[in-house]
Amino acid sequence: MSDGGFWQELVGLGNKSRDIRSLIAADAGRFGGFSARFDDVLYDYSRTSLTAEAKDLMLEFLQARGFEARRAAMFAGERINSTEARAVLHTALRLPEGAALVVEGEDIAAQVMADRAKCFAFADAVRSGAIANAKGEAFTDVVNIGIGGSDLGPAMVTQALGGFVDGPRAHFVSNVDPSHVHDVLDALDLSRTLIIVASKTFTTQETMANAAAAQARLAAVIGETSGHFAALTTAVDKAEAFGIAPERCFGFEEWVGGRLSVWSAIGLSVMIGIGPARFGEFLAGAYEIDQHFQTAPLEENMAVAMAMVGVWHRNGCGFGTRSVAPYDQRLGQLANYLQQLDMESNGKSVRLDGSGVDYETCPVVWGSTGTNGQHAYFQLLHQGSVEPVEFLVAARRGGHEEQHDLLLANCLAQAQAFLKGRTREEAAAQLKANGRSAEDIESIAPHRVFSGNRPSTLLAYSELTPRLLGRLIALFEHRTFTESVFWDVNPYDQWGVELGKELAAGQLDAVRNPNAEIDPAMAGTLAHLRRLREA
Ligand code: F6P
Image 1: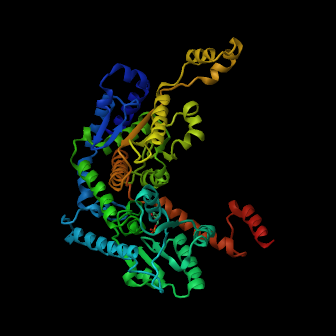
Image 2: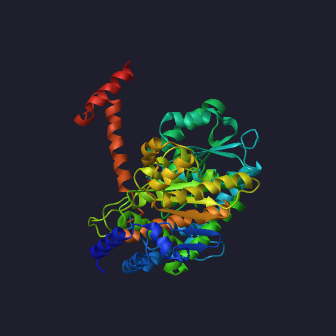
């Protein structure tokens, strides 16, 4: 199938099949055909305009793109990150004890187990107080200093698994804005705080500036700081040069991408918080999805279904964004996490062979928890532009079932409202039933019309546990990969971010040096800022 032909055909099908309500009315088996299950996890995409014809077309195209071979290449450790000549092996990080994986003659599994064991031993020792401050007092707080993948993963997981934390509390510092590091440290007893500097490269400007600020603060308050620092990095030499003892440096390999690194030493703050055993369950959940992703037939493969819906909405229907709405407060940082996972991976315009794409790639990803979003931007989702919504909800919340029912009911009601909408006649009848005058009805009814027919999907699961969270994140990772195969882009580099880093270095000179040459586009603003700084 030719590339151009596929995209044209997809748009044609997208234009034809916009009426979700009639698709549902016409097919009593729609839920069965447009949902996927893995154990307790359900992905329901029946309330989208995807048709069987479009699904067949997309699966055929995915196969023609070499999806199965590309997937196998990733799991086998081939250097699929072509622009950086690197393997992409985050999946190796969740291999169970005893598994084998040899890549280019190296025993990757053994390396993973050794790195994991070192992190687990350290986490256990911090939790038990065996590793403590100079006075022998146990650490009460852990501050993870990192940014991007060295922050978003552990921060999101820490909040998500808040109910399982029984170790020192974790805090996160990412922004180079000095307020961030100082506000966090201000609130802590520094004598009982462990600082973890998380940076794959150990060169990231924000992280290095924050680590230096933390080091200076601790030195001023408690004097000797080395017992209060640990590093998570692939550049152990740089961490040692910063002053962190080698036995406090936790390594991982260059084949772990930043946004896929929560399973590695980057998850140390989580391991300390919930303990190695629960972290092991988190890894096991992801491993189960890795197996499902590799072995389930494409028609039943949940990550493939999620990717098909993503590409259908982006390319078949032309939607520019996808909104993530977890009806699960502890997933409050999921949208931030997915922004990096999806947009840093697939926000690309160059194909693997270097040619430009002539179709859209990753949509803008945004969102927040329900029910909060309902009282903020859902108005637009009901009556403004059409943006697909991805709901997530748990079936239960141990110990608080009655209140959880309210959450669940709201989630289902929103999905239903997006689908059904309300006609003018229905709006008028409702106003009439409320005793409004004919004149009122005439003027108000149009404002209470909802077009409906707005797509949404739903990921439903039993309860947010470490295992379930591992499953969810792995599903999202594999969706990102599968979408990248559709779009034929390399999801594992991020040259756009590198550009920002290069330009920031130039602007620093302009900010600090009054004689620096200034780009005319910035001259006016910079002159204003300089005046304010000198005042
Ligand atoms: O945002 C770009 C990026 O390179 C991410 O991919 C990475 O997660 C982040 O910077 C942090 O990098 P590091 O872990 O090397 O400090």
